[in-house]
Image (cartoon, rainbow, N blue to C red; front, side, top):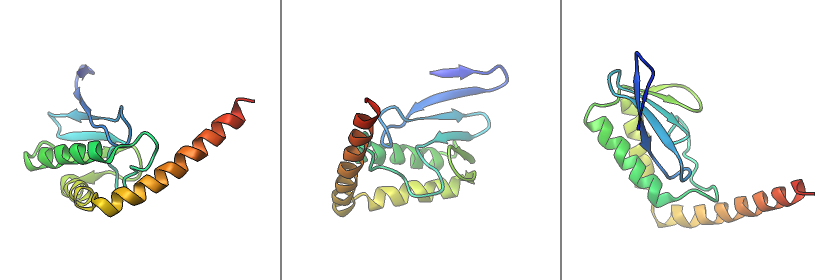
Length: 127
């Protein structure tokens, strides 16, 4: 989809991983990426009960490809400070490289704990 703001058009990019419905908004003309929670200058969160590492890897590969094609100059994340394409390439590449078996196993443990905490929290709020 494309969101037309009159003087700016934002292309909606489905980028699952952090969550199933994660998106980025890409301003092709100005080479800006509004990344939301998909990527920011910090540790990527892939341990939530609805996160999927395999989806996150594919989304990061897509981001690396966009940088390689020079489609992004500036990233406007949902958290922390803005950063440029070189930092985006590094963050996405590092995630891809570190998402091996050990990362998957430790993430599975954290995801289980987070899921239990969410269930406990939801059961208390239902009363």
